[in-house]
Length: 218
Image (cartoon, rainbow, N blue to C red; front, side, top):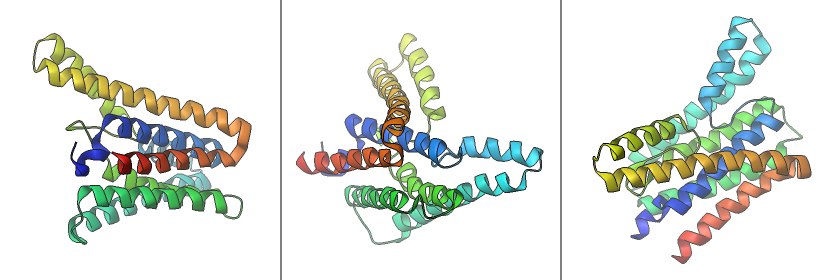
């Protein structure tokens, strides 16, 4: 595998999906039932609170959504208009950005309002969502699974109908494993949070460090 494609391997996608599920579950458990990356969930909860005119809760969900939007725009701007970096260098930088974000979350989680903290976490998680979108030459998402579920269903039917069987088998297996990895991340977040509280946030940090070590050794 070429150096620039190391971040597009299935093991890396699985690790990133565990991080995505873990961090989303962590923010939901510890930061006022708000998701850090899964903004569809936040939008639904925002709508429910608008319907009941719960002004305080409206901002609790709106600010992370705006933060995620701003970070996505920044990530896209830097990738398209900033210094010309290889995909490997860019994605490696994003891992470091995410590591810094998780560390800041741990350091400030008891000092700042939860809405501020989860908005910061959403900002950093947006970089992962934006920057890791391909595994084995097909699209996927590491921090949300609607598209992954769709691809599992579509590839299964295409395979049974005999269309590009090898490619659809790969897509089916990859996306199914990614979904299960996301669920595993949420499970681990619940377990580790019950044992270690907010210090559970160090687990996804260790996974990200593991990703950096893995791609450097290959």
